[in-house]
Image (cartoon, rainbow, N blue to C red; front, side):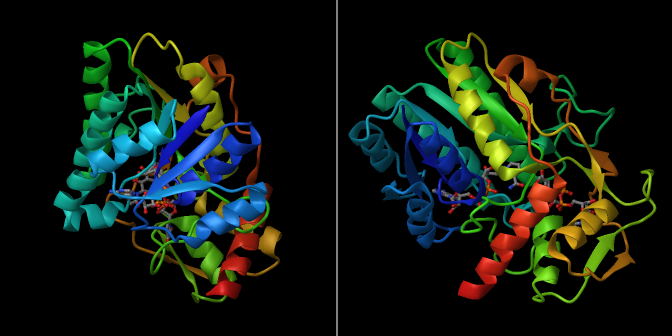
Length: 335
Ligand code: NAD
Ligand code: UD1
């Protein structure tokens, strides 16, 4: 199939390009490069060994999107594009609503015009808000604690209304837990601007000597070692989840949301230890105050992914940390 990946040059999109290509699909990247680098396309071509189609554009440019869908005879869209920094979303909320919510409306309009009605949407475990129980299954009540999370909730609702209005649409929302790690080649990976907000990229930069020490946000949570617990999923497992999602999409009778996680939670201290083993570098850290808005623990129920998609995450902490360190080393060498 010909698959359009909005935001396909970004962290998760670029890894999904590889999984799609390896499975015999033809990926087409559509990205405005506001949070990625054009050189990712060359690096993808090196990994895949063939050219990768790329269109530079904004998802709010409906005419360009419509033309792209038609020119490339697209069968389905995976919609990754959007802004994703939780803290920033409270500072510039309108940009988040514009890029994420309005951008999605423009994409849906273009898809309607081009008569492409198969869509996989990048949602997030953030739509569950503060967990009322664990593991988080898809029936857990939804809420948002910041503008970023609210954009994801709004988009899920818009897609639900769309499916209810027109049964020709096939719509699947994938709720990602914490994507981490990199492709085994070490040529692509997560490349945050400035000081990383998220744990693994921060640890990676400490290991590479770019940052001096990790601050652990709280050691008084009601978790086994007092530090926050999350469901870290290897980005290539996540990428392969999208392959399963595309097969499942066809003829989907209802709007559907499915968790993509591992079902297993690890603490901050466990992640540091795993990274030290993989990189053979000590990660200095200190305990500081809790980060406002953080939750103690969050991990997925993976039953629905298993039963409906026939997909489970295969890679473990070692694969995550080794690939992350390999990418970080390469990234530092080209900086
Ligand atoms: P990313 O920032 O690396 O990738 C997003 C890509 O979209 C970038 O290449 C960016 O240039 C592009 N983009 C942004 N706005 C655009 C616009 N208006 N028009 C065209 N392109 C645009 O992010 P990612 O980590 O790959 O995340 C992909 C998706 O998954 C996002 O929707 C994100 O909210 C969601 N998600 C990510 C995580 C995570 O931890 N990485 C967790 C849950 C959900
Ligand atoms: C982040 C997002 C969340 C998103 C999720 C998925 C924030 C506030 N939340 O949350 O919306 O759905 O990623 O990827 O950005 N930690 C430290 N020191 C650090 C960084 C993190 O101790 O420098 C701790 C955190 O307190 C947490 C754990 O590490 O316990 C993971 O943090 P992070 O990687 O930011 O992910 P989430 O908190 O799940």
